[in-house]
Image (cartoon, helix red, strand yellow):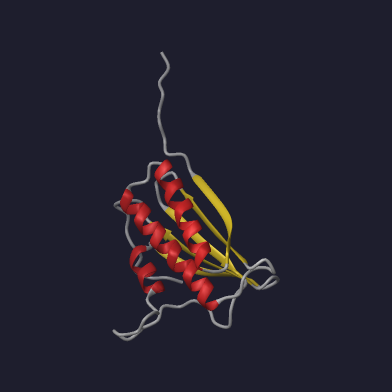
Length: 151
């Protein structure tokens, strides 16, 4: 008699998207579909899609594309425990990502604050040789602990 054990298999995906609003929607739909297919809970899917949206929107607003084709890269992976790591790589910009303190009436500036409240950790990696900048965030598995500090 064979014993079959089901196990959450780690998944990962990477895609180039246009450096603009249409790229955000394309990436959101693919992330949502892939996490749903992997059996992730809806609350994790919702938070992951929100984080991806914020990272992509910040890239479009504050950074250059990676290439002449006006592309940036979105990627994500889910580990065996269900934690999801989301990252966006672009061509960098004049400033580095950092949480802001917008006024109550400000129309923007809350993206990294939202990510800080949802993610276990987030950070920025730079590739000086190419100028590429990657902003990443780790969303804890359901029941995981959100971060209290970032770097």
